[in-house]
Length: 239
View 1 (spheres, rainbow, N blue to C red):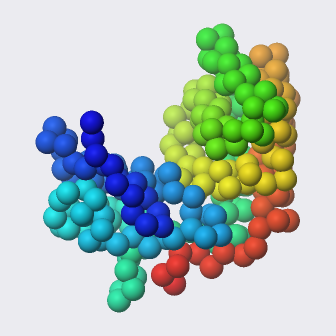
View 2: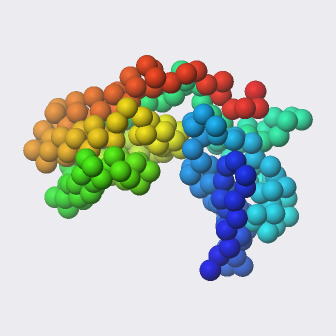
View 3: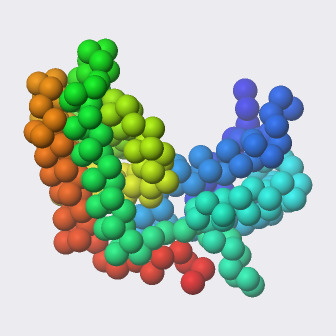
């Protein structure tokens, strides 16, 4: 079994196995760790210590440095001279813009899904929407937050437009982290369960307009929640 360790404050990494391509494994491990980190929690530690990362992976610092450079090119980390490397956290204004873009992308995907999704894809959406009842979602918010993102990704896939998915992928890390935090607030998990059922019903009815409207309203509800309830972020802690 692979050995895992935890860096104080942020991420969990898996030691490199001999069967892995070193460069790809280090990059993949760091990216997944950032994806799993709750970067929008108030107490989130955004600093990544190069030496600690290398020790956790059981490798030298050079491939870690290369992976961090690659992640910096993708905008997921920021290398700040004389301060270190930090996971990028968007400002509140940037978060609201990202949610708006995601709402537009996913609502179009839902419209297309109502027209183009196969019966099997709609059945899969139905299973995802029905996996958690109201009380289960409230009692298991972390697990439901992950199921929630799988549901939204499934809508994008059911839209059968690769470019919609590619653009959404560029927002995924931050949208996932935002949804994860928001799911714990104002009983949003309960509302999410009801919204997902309504969205699937519209897609199953093969009603593009209704499906698009329901997805747009659902995601803009997240936008309005963040706008009303979240304080301003300063971005990554390095700035």
